[in-house]
Length: 173
Image 1 (cartoon, rainbow, N blue to C red):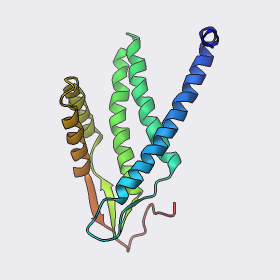
Image 2 (image 1 turned 60 degrees about the vertical axis):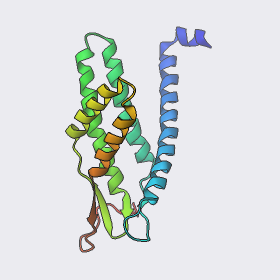
Image 3 (image 1 turned 45 degrees about the horizontal axis):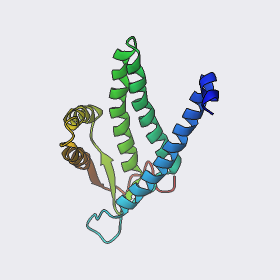
């Protein structure tokens, strides 16, 4: 089998791409279920629970977009000519990740409330770079995960649901 890939780089790229998309789709399906489970267990001061109703395909598409941008960073770093361009996807990942968090909040139903993510791409970018640098020492990794998670939670607002204004996105979507 390796002779076929060696003689046909296009076949190797095609197989690798299909493999990547399948793995990302499976990973997205699992993390979406985890997110649904996690959101349902958060208490908002009432006996009723929150529900995440984001569909699988957009959830997986967000995950694939973030992964592709991450992969572009490494691909661009290989060639010395394109190395300076490798910073572009790094910056883009922060903004895409914050947009994904906003999407998750919009698709989470809380009884008589709505969620909104207020963090910025720049704030996520600098925190990610600090966490990456600190994680090179291995030992701070758990603290960096906690630090980033706390930042995300601090930037999620629970706002009262104004029933007089029609919802932009609702569970029926």
